[in-house]
Length: 115
Image 1 (tube, rainbow, N blue to C red):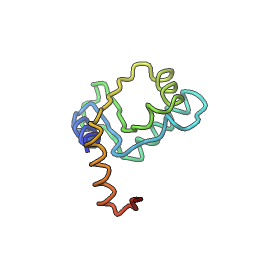
Image 2 (image 1 turned 135 degrees about the horizontal axis):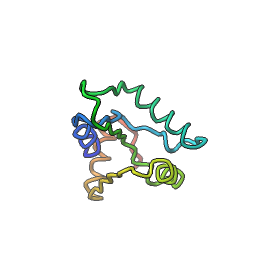
Image 3 (image 1 turned 90 degrees about the vertical axis):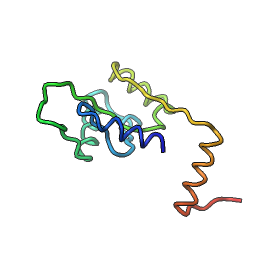
């Protein structure tokens, strides 16, 4: 999938730490920036995201994949207010190819498909 590939490519950069799976930190009802940052770092530490090299003099960037955050107004608000320098990458898929991919995913994972 394109988002998983992008996550892996970004994670290869020595200054970027990417969570290996989707995170739901910004969607939780948190009590302001300190709790949000704590939840974010706890989530990242669960995925064993440590510095990739011995030179810690460079700025470490953190990233995560969560396609639903842009659809949740409170998640977008939390991001804008508490992490104002955040850069967002949004991938847009061709609608027919996306449905084909979704169908194939459901078949491969033996999900029930309604007729």
